[in-house]
Each structure stands twice: as structure tokens, then as C-alpha cells.
Image 1 (cartoon, helix red, strand yellow):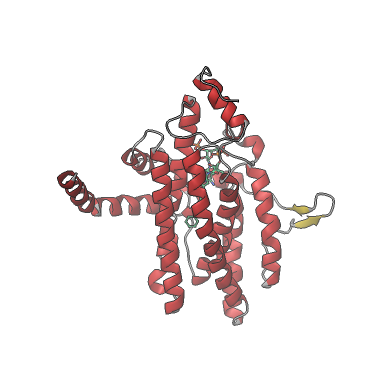
Image 2: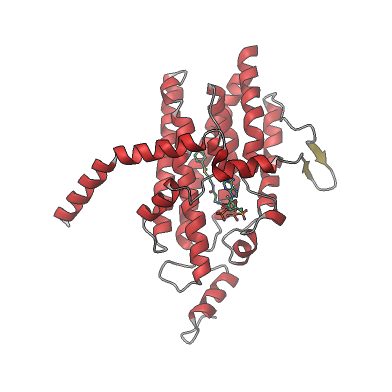
Length: 309
Ligand code: BYC
């Protein structure tokens, strides 16, 4: 039971233990605040940088219908970035500080957005696999202990399920098209499969942040548990449209009631996370250029706000 004599730490512990949300004005340990500032801002950066590989195909979408849907999806990602930056700002750091950390390379963003999108089928693979992986992670984060983060996740998940279906529809369509179209869909799956399952982060034993994140109920499930859920969900979807997941070790394990799967290339993963993936430099340069080109908009908006209170 909460009572007026509790210290900030006691009240915080009580809330965590009883699955009550921590809100911006509540006392919280410094490390909890810093952990959330890092994770939430990196999550926001991922949404914004994630617009680039898909934005690359808006002008080349194969039909008006496909274009309108892709445009709406990319706009949604911008909205997700906005909710997440706003939610992260409630922890006492400004959006300008977060952006500076992204552009200077101090803050990370999801490894998955450092791969090029080479064909229209990649729009299918990104929606199906990348948004599919993001949903598994974000459904779990709906129960995170920080109120503004949890509420942002509820809204984001609603839109994310449309994104996943948009991607799967493209893949299904291409997989039942000509031989050449089916080969493009398979090629996109081959290139995006391993990076998608690495989105969940390192194995639990190699994940330095998981201990505190689970203790504070920031994360509700571990990297490996979420990765397994995603794989179990996705294998049947690939089979249904006649595509093959590029993992010779993928096999149903009756005893575990889950799929066994092959090992990921962690040296490659860390190389990408450290900034040496195929598109890291291009992604950050594009962000800096767009930010600079938009500076007049921010100036005008600030001047307007100052003048009109
Ligand atoms: N990429 O101890 P760990 C989307 C870093 S976008 C890069 O496991 P943690 C979408 C990690 O940050 C959705 N870095 O850390 C948008 C840490 O380094 P720092 C993106 C990674 O935080 C457009 C270090 O490795 N979703 O939906 O417990 C189009 C050790 O890792 C990655 C989120 O951001 C990675 N994959 O777990 C389509 C979800 N993995 O920070 C779709 C929110 C690990 O100590 N974030 N690292 O320097 C999370 O759930 C967690 O932060 C992670 C990592 C699972 C990503």
C-alpha cells in the first residue's frame, strides 16, 4: 500500500513491484531515467532513420495504389518518431540534445536500417519482416513501466500491424507472380532474414542492458524470447506463400514447441552497430542534410510561437 511517509525510492519500488506506471513527475533513480532516455531516444531515431530505405521507393512504386499505401506508411513512421521523442523529452532532455547524439554517432539506431533496399520486393520484406519484428518487440513494450513510453507503444502498435500486412501483401503478390517476380521476393527474404532476427539484439547472455531493464520492468521479455516468438510466428507465413527461409538449421522442435534455428553472424552485427554497415554513413549524412535544409522551418515556427505566446 502506498502511504505519505514513503521515500521516493520506496514508492518507486512499490510501483515497479505492483505493475503501476512511473510517471514523469515521480521520483525515479537516476540510472532508470538514463536507461529510458537512451532506449526511448534510440527507438525514436530508428523510426526516423527507418523512413529512408522505404522513402527510396516512393517515386518508383509500381502502381498508384502501392504508392499511396507506402506513402501513408512512411508518414506513420514520422509520427512514431514524434510520439517517441515527445515521450523521451518528459525525462528532462531536449529533442535537440537527442538529435545531436544521433548525428554525432553517440546514439545508436536499429541496425536493420543500414541495409540498402534494392528492389520493390524489399518493400515487402521490410514491411513483413522488419515491422513484424518491431511489433513483437513493441507489443511487449506496451507493458513497460514508464507511463509515456507504454502509452506511445499502444498507439504505435495499432499502426504497425497495418504495416506488417502491407509488406506481407506485397510478398504474397510477388510470390504468386511470374518466375522472375517470385525470385525477387525470395531474394529480398534471403537478404532481410538474418538482419531482421538480429534486430532483437544480442543473445541474453551477451546483453549488458537486459538485467536492469528486466528488474525495472522497462523490458518485459528478453531479446532471445522475443526473437523466438518472431521466428515461430513467421515461418508458417513464409510457407503459406511458397517462400523459403534461408536457414538450413531451421527445424521444428516438438519438445520445445518452437523452431530451432541457426546462429547469427555476431561479428557482422557489431560491425553494423558500430557504424560500418553498408549504409550507415549515407543514412546519417542524409539526416544531417535534411535537418539543415529544414532549419528555416524550425526558425519560422519558433518565431511564430514567440510572437503568439
Ligand atoms: N541495433 O544490452 P542490449 C521500426 C545495442 S523501428 C542497434 O541488448 P537493450 C520501424 C544496444 O542499444 C523499431 N543497436 O541493449 C521503423 C546496446 O548499446 P547501448 C526499433 C543495438 O537496449 C521504420 C548494445 O547493443 N525498435 O519499428 O537492452 C520502418 C547492447 O544491447 C541493437 C526499438 O528500438 C540493434 N538491433 O536491447 C519499419 C525497440 N540491438 O545503447 C519499422 C526499443 C542492441 O548501450 N528498443 N543494440 O550503446 C529495445 O527494445 C532495445 O533497446 C533493443 C536492445 C532490443 C534494441
